[in-house]
Image 1 (cartoon, rainbow, N blue to C red):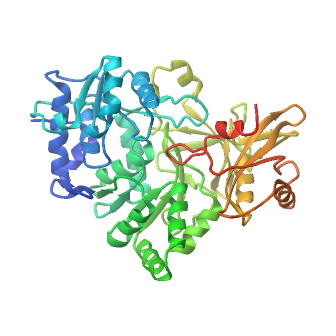
Image 2 (cartoon, helix red, strand yellow):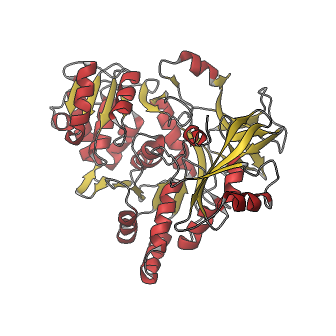
Image 3 (cartoon, helix red, strand yellow):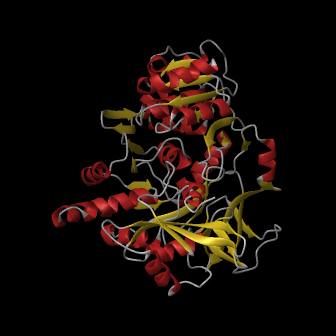
Length: 498
C-alpha cells in the first residue's frame, strides 16, 4: 500500500468520487488521480526505493496528464521541474541542464523536441504513456522539508534562476490562498494559464485540488473558447494575467449586442475573478468592470514567495493597488540601507514567512544576496497608501533616476495609457550623461490610429511633471513579452540604442 505524507495528496483521499480535472475529452476523479499518479511514481522509481531528490523535467499536454505526472514525481521522492510547451529547444535545454535533471518525461507530442536533448545529456527519457500504465509498487514517505519543485524565474532582467520550493513551502502558499479567497469544494475554476509558473500551478491547480474543487482545463488560451466556456459552463472562479483580460475585452467589444449581454451575464455568475503576474492597468480594471460588473481582485507575488499581498475578498478593492499581507505572510518596506521606510515613503518590499522559497538552485551566492536576515529582498518598490500597497515597479528596471528625481515607470505608463490613441506602453530608463537616465516610452497605437512623437510629448507634458514626461518615444507594433504577459524591459531598452 502506498502511503504518502504529502498533505495535498493525502487530502485527495477525502474526495475520491468527486471530479478533480475536467477536460474537453472527459472528466477525471480524485480517485483516478491518486491511482494514476501512484503508477507514474512506480514507473519513475523502476525498482529504486526513493528518487531521493532527483530532478524530473516534464512536459505534457494541458490536461489530466499534468497533475498525474506532477504528483507521481512527488510521490516517488523526486523534484518536479515543469517545462514550458512554447519554449524553443535552447530554453528547454537550459532548464534541463541547469536543474541537473536526470529524468525527462515527455508527452508524445513533444518527443521530437525533447528526445535529442535527453540523448545529448545522456539522461533517462520516458514517455507519459509508459508511466501512466506502469504497475503499482510501494512508495516512499516524503517529508515536508524535502524539495518538491524547481520553478524558473521569468528571466525579464537576466538568465532564469531555479527557485527551489519545499513541500512545506507549497503547503503554506496554498493554504494562505485557501483562507484568503475562501476556496471550497463546490468551486470550479477555469484554467487557461501556463503550467510552468506559480500562477497556473499553485494559485489555480494546487488550490483547486487542495479544496476538493474542480479544475476545468483548456488545452490553450483562446479568447472565443474561454468566453464559450464561461457562457456554457458553471465556473465560480477565474484567474488570469492582464494580457488575457485585455484580449477577452477586445473579443467582447467585437461581438454583437446580443452576444455581449450573454457574455456579461455569464461572468456575473462567478464569485471571484483575479488578475496577477503583471501590473493591471487602471484602464483595463475599469474596462473589465464595465463589461462584467466584476471588480478584479489584484494581488502581488513572486515565484520565490508565492502570493504576499492581496486585495480583500470582501471589502473595497482599489485599482492600481495590491492590498495587504496575506495570512501568515510578513511584509515590510525598507530604504536602500535596509532601514524600515518612514510612513508614506516608498521602499523595497521584503517578505518573510513559511511561503518563502528555500534557495536558488546551485546558486549559493545569489541566494545569500537575496536575503537580509530572514527577509527576502523582492527588488520591487512600493508605497503604502491608506493601508494598501501600491507597486511602483522593479527596483532595477521600473524606478528611473532622472535629473535627481526618482520616478516610477509604472506611474508614467498609467498616464500614457489614458491617451485615446495609445493601446499599450512600456516605459524604461536609458543611461544619459546629463540626466543620469532619460525617460523613454515604447508605444503601441490603437488599430488605425495615428500619433506623432511631438503630439504625444506635448500631451504628456500637460499631465506629467516635466522630468517624468518621456524625452524619447518609439512606436512599435507589439511589446516583447514573456509567456506570463510580462513586458521584457531589457529588450525594450534596446529599442533606444546602445
